[in-house]
Image (cartoon, rainbow, N blue to C red):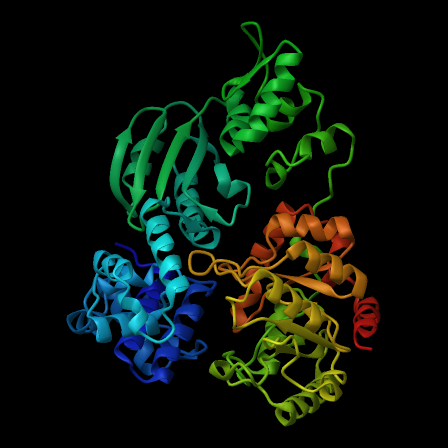
Amino acid sequence: MPVHNEDIAAIFDEMADLLEIEGDNPYRVRAYRNAARTVRHLGRELSDMVARGEDLTRLPGIGKELAAKIVEIVNTGHARALDKLHQRVPASLEALLKIPGLGPKRVRALYHDLHIKTLRQLEDAVRRGRLRQLPGFGPRTEQRILENISAHRTEEKRFLHSVARRYAEPLVAWLRQTRGVDQVVVAGSYRRGRETVGDLDILVTVRGESPVMQRFTEYDEVADVVSRGTTRSTVYLRCGLQVDLRVVEKASFGAALHYFTGSKAHNIRIRHLGQQKGLKINEYGVFRGEKRIAGETEESVYASVDLPWIPPELREARGEIEAAREGRLPVLIEREDLRGDLHCHTRATDGTASIEDMARAAQRAGLEYLAITDHSRHLTVAHGLDADALRRQMDDIDRLNDRLDGITLLKGIEVDILEDGSLDLPADVLCRLDLVVGAVHGAFRLSRRKQTERILRAMDSPCFSILAHPTGRLLGEREAYAVDIERIIEAAAERGCFLELNSQPQRLDLTDDHCLLARERGVLVSINSDGHQVSDFDLLDGGIRQARRGWLEKQHVLNTLPLSQLRRKLKATMQ
């Protein structure tokens, strides 16, 4: 069976979790987490690099020991080091880690102090009030754990869009190589750019007799064939992702693509418009009586109800049909519109590359400017910069700009917003920078009022440019902290500062709804990679996808501006 980068990253993440539960050296734990990040965001498959005998130690954060483990995983599908950890740490503890709010440190305390190994034991301990014996486990924490256990048991398994993409693209390429296949498109929530994907709906058209169904069910990633027919088959991949393949007639392809792309609410509205015109619209076409009058293309489906084609990202019944009818559909932002990235890290804190390496990588990604925004001192886990270290980095950036050609570096910092709303570094240092990116990295459990006031106080600071990942969520791991995001957006409009759309796949923060709110209030959004290694600029694609779902056009995004205009915008925030 082929081994994908996601498989290797998952093993490294699991090892980091188990080592942290054991109380292992934090630097070793961090090495595995950084390696997982490197592997997950790598633009090439490690299995191909191993097959070619390439030197894996040239990858950021991958030393000889980790490189050897990668080779082992590629060749065998598992790591002996993980097997040994499983012998020492009960496998059932991994289920506890999937409960939001229970990180490795808390799971370690539950295991070592209360001998809790399973979800059932945890639930029982909560109901009996045993968790209150441990530091940091009060009544409110117990209630949240119970709620999260219940949600965990009932929630549908979903995959980050970025993860689903790693499986969808090779499968689509495989199907396109099949004799007789013409078109292959992934529809559903994947095509609409949703943050997470429950399954994949793939549509194909064929010429004559094609073995596409056989080729699909024999794909080497398939773990289970649920059903196999002449026009539809369903399988589960080894990663647990369900995939449905449908063969549709060429004359119906546009109608089927529209139908299976969704959303359901959008489709209902379109069908209702058709009914008003005496038409029946379904997955087979647009019909007047028994006669099919449209359906070969999506454009023909929309034209049948007097609408222009609507981009898939907008099809959520949030006003897109009215906008289409009135000629107000946005010209959605494209990746090529981005001129720079205003949030990235280097090995000065928790990144894996030098400033120059990140600059060169940004330039290769087609960017004209890049802000270096390493962490401030309060984030000790990232070895944040104090004022003196930041001053030295500013001098380094000036020297680099003197010899860099084709890209300009901006001096910045990702400064912690402390619990009282103050910033982690003094204003006299911050105001020497080109921009200040403020971020909440702790005290997530403040009340909605206190969290909102905390951020508002930070935005009132004399040097504050961009609010990073404004709700603090991590998809599948951590809910957004309680905050009045509408008030934050209103304040950003009043103060003239900006909001970030963080492109890290687990963040994608702002949400699409919040992007739409920012657009309506005239607050510019900065689509940033939050890059920690040279390959992370590829993540900007995910940020663009989220921005498109939020109706953002080029003029709504800060880092589409030419450098001279950007500097003027940023300077206005640094006074």
